[in-house]
Image (tube, rainbow, N blue to C red; front, side):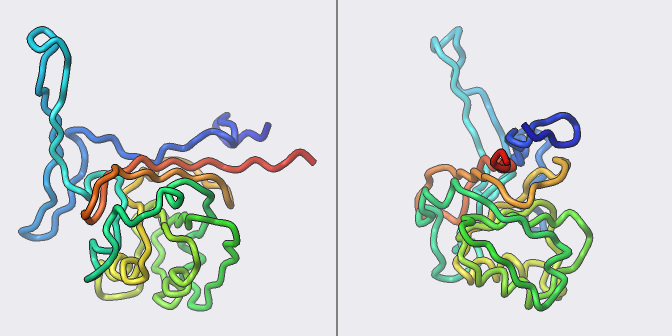
Length: 210
């Protein structure tokens, strides 16, 4: 069985999901801030006979999936994401690939595009447009993708306008990714909303014995 650096098997799942706790970073921009995360004990075993917690958070809290309506007027809401698009296979795209305006990619069979944006490189807008023209309905980003455009949210708007779902705010200190592999990106089953916290996992697909 193939082994990646650090002794992990290539078939091990990599959990890209941030922990939901008091240390979680919450998006802020000027006077705006997303709802803070809070987990409070609601019922105690000694009094109610069971333990229940109350959660308070926003749809874009922590590692999450954006639905197109998060940025696009008339865009699809979260419940319009087919469940079959939450589990499948990814094709890796590096930030370096996206610096080329003539970017092209063969992603036959992939249900997700996994963008490794941990390098401080600026993607070309033409490369992003070519990426969004590809069939996979969901994009997973690792790191903050930088684009050669004045609008810091241009990439998010273009993803939404293309009708794609975006999984983001994932962990970054997870080592290197294989060229392709399996992916799970499952949101809560919410209806009519712009996104949801999600569990996002990837793993390399082992080569068949040769």
